[in-house]
Amino acid sequence: MSESIVILMIGVSTLLGALGLIALLWGIKTGQFDDHSKFIDSARFDGEDALRDAVMMEEKKKKRDEKKKKDEKAYGPPD
Image 1 (tube, rainbow, N blue to C red):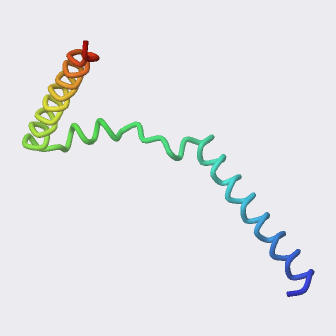
Image 2: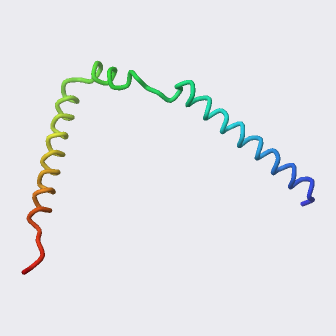
Image 3: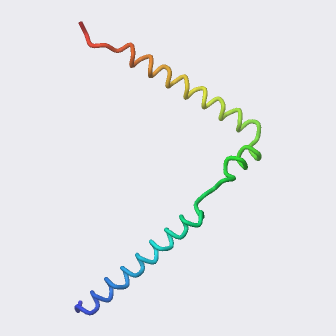
């Protein structure tokens, strides 16, 4: 490849990268990635079974965390 083609490819890729970065920063600044209604809509449209399963999963997680803490406290170096 000639030098002019390599320089052109580097210039175009730099320009496209800069445009992508500008678009990302614009999206963050204008709140395009914020989803304020996600949790409200999920609570409003979830069925009773899904909510019951979520509560059951939270209880299992709490029990697992308590057991893990208990096992960590019970461990001690041998005397």
